[in-house]
Length: 149
Image (cartoon, rainbow, N blue to C red; front, side, top):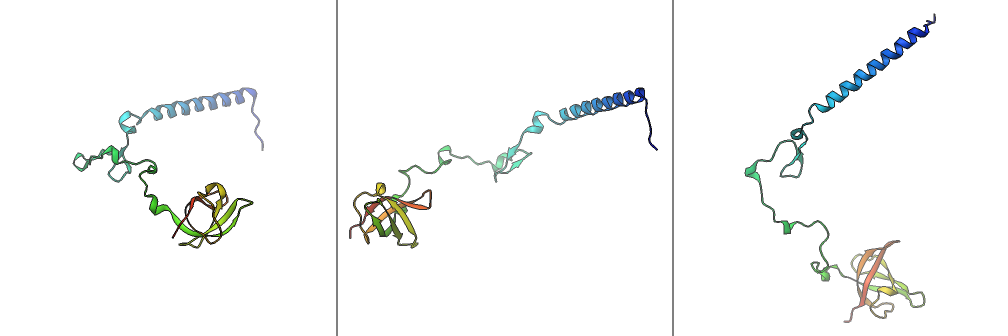
């Protein structure tokens, strides 16, 4: 059987629902304030770099020299350039189109080279020295120079 309510009963239910909603809202606000003191919000970092709620023991503290911290890659003058250069042999080069390929002597990988990256003229079977960078379509050779024996 369906129950029918009068207009007055429906209005009382609406007011009761509003009252309950306001009560819940007030309770949430009061509970949100509890436990959010400044001391509760502080986080510490332990010796392993993990976040913790307890402060570090002063006896385990180490001094760090700020100059020893490196945030980015090393500067160009700090890098050992002789270690980064690869050697290989030109397997294909087209002067008209201005590009070619070099076979890396270590990995036997074929590396694209554009004429703008050449320090001088190259030909097929020339031994060259170069750096490998990631290009749009794969590895590319830059700073290519012919090695004289």
